[in-house]
Image (cartoon, rainbow, N blue to C red; front, side):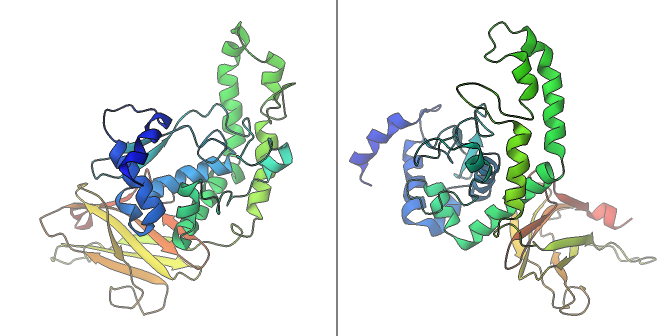
Length: 336
């Protein structure tokens, strides 16, 4: 794209800083023309989480829907853009258009393709990223995680009813409300509204959960990551531990196990491979126990880390909510 062609795009964005247009256009260029370098300009994992979230809850007033709207792009200190979801009032099928044809009916919303827009070149955050087999696998794993954690578990319906009870009095007292209090009471379970049919949350997501559970791309089993341990000082030994020796058992045919770590909470996470070869005190080779040794180079005393395992179908993480929680250990604790 030539510089003279860029200015017309500036008016399509709501800028909340005085700079960033050049960087945004570089992100678009890399995404479309040089996707092998996308990790340098985009937080891909956060983007895949956003896309998975939008799809599973049928949030079509978003990048996933007709207009590719309602998210911010924030550039971090490393020069990478990170998407931030915004404006969820039309989620759960309240906005119904994917940009192809008329609005979707309830059944189509319930059975929205988890790979929607896979071949849509006007949605490069989807088509370019999910066109990469590894990113596609991570994206599907994120969908599976959200599905398991919130919808298969039943937490979603319970939380929806809690929030409904929390705001019911305020809704009832609002003189400008769009819907009756009876419709508000019904809205968790069934469709309300005469003109704009708003799906009931449970009505939409119960069948959507069943649809996604049986979808061929999501019905496969991800790796199981178990027994994550950091080796401490041997009983009665006077020799202190000066490194972090981490092991984990991984089942379900893992073909790759990676450790992401940082020492003393500083900087970004470094990626290293874990091995099942008997050379890292992981037992005999091929026993599905993977190990790695992290040696502090500058007197670091603590480590935080998470583990990523991949099999032919999906990807797993430990901790499962690794975005917000990490495994942690200190040399002091290992030497007690």
